[in-house]
Every structure is written in C-alpha cells, then in structure tokens.
Length: 243
Image (cartoon, rainbow, N blue to C red; front, side, top):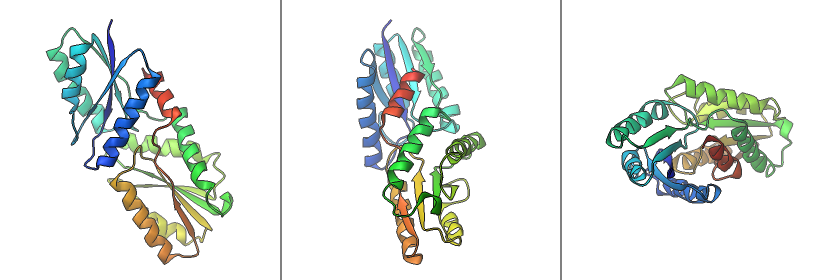
C-alpha cells in the first residue's frame, strides 16, 4: 500500500513563521525515509489543507494527517476533521488517518525543559531567585488551556525555580504585562519568559518588546526571553510515534 504523511500547520501572515514550519517538514522527511511527506495549512498560507489532502490522495492509498498543533482546540477538533471529511468523499478508496495534537506528552515536557535550561544558563541569577513565566498562546477551548496548565505543572514539580507562572498571548488571562507587573513586586533577581510556541513570528517580537519595556521600568531585575520550541529531535521522535 502506498502511504504518505501530511503535516498540518496553522499558517501565518509572518513569512518567517511559515518558513520555519516548512523547514521542519523537510527535515522530518529524513526521519521517515520510507514515506512521502508533504504539508498544508489550515489558514492564511498555501497550500490549503484541502488542496494538500487532495494532492496526497492522488498519490497514495493511505494518508496519515499529522497536525503540528500543541493542543487540541477548535482547529484540531473541528476544522481539520471537516476538511478530511470533504476530501474523503472525493477519494472514497483512500484511507485517511488523523493523529491527535502534540498534547501533554513526556517528549514535549522534555523539549520544554530543554529550552528553559538553555535560556536559564545565560542568566547570572541563581535558579532559586528566578521566576519562570511559561507563556501559552491561549485558546477559547478550555481543554487546550487545561492541558497547557497540566504540562507546566509537570515542569514546575522539578524545576527548582523560585516559582513558575503561567500567562497567555491572547484569548485567555492573565496576559504577560499583568503577570510581569505582579511578580516584579516580589523583587526576584531574574525573570525568565519561556514562550510555549513552536516557531518565531510576530508574537515573539511582541514578547521581546514587552520584556524590553519591563527592563526599563525595573532595571534591577534581569529579564530574559527564551526561544521558541522550534525544530528538535524530541519533536521528530514524537511525530514518528504518532505515525
């Protein structure tokens, strides 16, 4: 049976974010040499998910859909299966299988911990006098926010930081500015912001601008914005497990 893998991204108006996703897909191909790997987007960018599904279905008898989404919110629960349903009608002899979102997984916890440790090593303040803020995208779906909180809670248990806080980019509260002003009252020696986002884009620029403003207002507190999760062997391994 001929098989193909379709990695699905959200799509961004920021070319850098789309380029990061597409580089990731090309590099993932090396980890599954026996399968054809392609990509599609749910919104904004091209090819659209339906276009990508149809293209994969023309070349394969079985298509495995891999959503590169951190958690299952509206896109993964509703938009993705709706698109698969439409294309399934056009290609009734093709078998479509859809993997779940990345979710609360030990490999995602390892990746998050790795990024935090990389950024923490650049701070002069000791860990026990540093507050870690993990920043999620935020969602209208309570299940997605609950899973995010669960993953950060798992990190906190062995983190060694003074405290671990949660905030969001949008749709859910608290936001970053509110969280920064609140934790600043405790006068930590340092604050580390870890975005729980896959690829860089405008959101990261906004976080860095807020951190720069905070640094001006609180010059006695060292602040550091960590990098996105980005491409990593932990992520490739998790996708292989889902396949």
